[in-house]
Length: 434
RNA sequence: GCAGGGGUUCCCGAGUGGCCAAAGGGAUCAGACUGUAAAUCUGACGCGCAAGCUUCGGUGGUUCGAAUCCACCCCCCUGCACCA
Image (cartoon, rainbow, N blue to C red; front, side):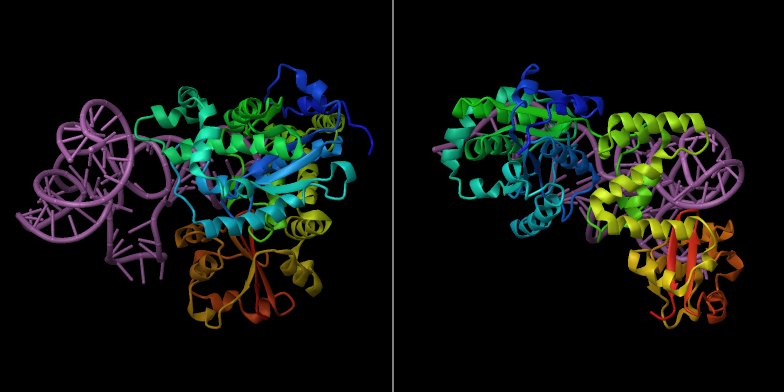
């Protein structure tokens, strides 16, 4: 095993990835040796979304620097629900559902760290393993006794729930911090884990673990948080018209994922390159300088989309995403070969076959059914503005009741395909062959 | 349990008997401009191509007419009490 990269923290700092750290600067010294660190991921759905990407990639950065990463899947904490900075109490999911999600997320996080790394090979653990059979009295005596309710109430992360009119917090969620603190203490015992990382919203939970480890085992452990990702325009990061951007290819296709990054605002793109890629800060600075000099359209978005898509979906996913993007956004779709079109379907371009009786339905109905818009009104609006293109040709409202003509076999690409575009970015492929 | 406050369309939030599918803002979608940006302007924004239909925690009532009034119920919040 090679030595550790002593410049890790400095690099994280240059990337803007350090929000807060415990220990008054002792962390740098602590990380001079190979250490074990962990980050938790609660199963709140069957997939993580890009909000978890920063901590996930940071784990990877630590491993690359010679440290041993543990990804903790919250089989226990997922049953409780983290109240940190959440505006309202959340409803509980059943143990069956959560345990199903645990498996999905275990597989997902596993892809981001290396398990054959020898001394600093990664590990995945589930906190249900040490809490599932825990006795309530033991818990209250061994863990609860170390926590002051006075302090917990004063945590910034739950303040709004306690002070805000119209909201409250149950004992269940209030107790969350104890569980997460136990995790840290437990991992310190089991794996000599001395660092926990997480989003800045986890600061309270992390320092709780630091304190508990000291009290239970007199162990000196550290915490490090990364900033939450924000966008310059103030809207929420990670959402689009299609909803959340998930890491699971079945929920968000590599193509949609790639497009999400490609559409990053100029004001955010260099920051995102530092957050979400392994390009060095110097390289990123050069990209920024070059973009500025050239004026016009920057290259940064393309680089970002490529790098992140490769990290999450691999070379194949990236290739598929780029094939679709090229086909749709540059050149004439009429030039696509039969093989190209079939490949686009396989690559995950939204597609479907036309129903047998499509001639009797309205165009609006067909496009809504295909998932191109949320309501008929949106399609109507688009039709009225010539914003619907079928194989490159604008279709107006007057053709709405005549889909047989619009989708007549004569007009199909290779007698089979229709590429329908709604607006500038939404595409759907209709395949007559099903 | 008692007292007080509250539950409105994705979110925030107006609306207190007809002029309400319901102000305003945000988010979102579409158009113009562009770079598949940003900013700006325009349109849409419960469902329905439309005629029209269904909404304002739930149920029932008063009324020609209710999101708005009444009754009961459910849920949330605040305070007080109770925890034998």
